[in-house]
Image 1 (cartoon, rainbow, N blue to C red):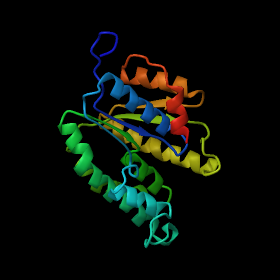
Image 2: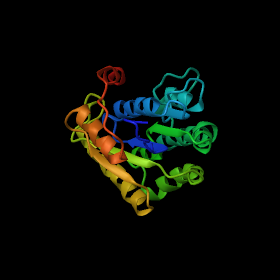
Image 3: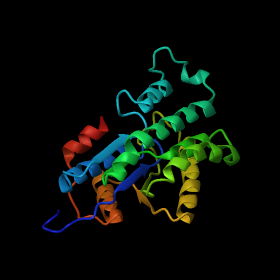
Image 4: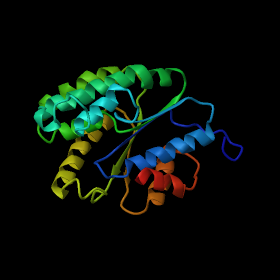
Length: 226
């Protein structure tokens, strides 16, 4: 309820973009917005994977970042195999959290989606090998409602110390391949520029989702930036 009016919140929203595009800030802000407008509606929010302790996704995240005890170093794992670990973690979350939440009438907000597996795998594999990899995961998504996709685009990453400009451009091109395919399949995808302020990107997000305006909380921005 907003200003006495009933607001229809999209039940499934995914945020995507190259590392350092500002996904986390906006995903967290949208989750806070949902909790304010629909406090009794079940809401599942996750970095995909990695934010829920004790899950397969959290373990895969630690493996990927060399933080898992008794696991091979990430540089000793074939890149394709490492991406397939992410696929397995995604399927686990679909079956244990995402699907049940949506079927119960709740909402899901994800910071990353299978698009990232495609984009990052395309840095070292041709499309004829990457599509079957993500296909193993997509058969499970096909059983659920299609999400509203939010792709955040920037001229330069906010993590310039971690991602070279050439890699940033290459990843953006790979994401655009996915966006084109998704749009052809009828999935709503909004490409939002995030080159100015977080507040402007937030306002553009609410417009894209057809939601009433709300200011972006400074405390939330500070929390997301950590």
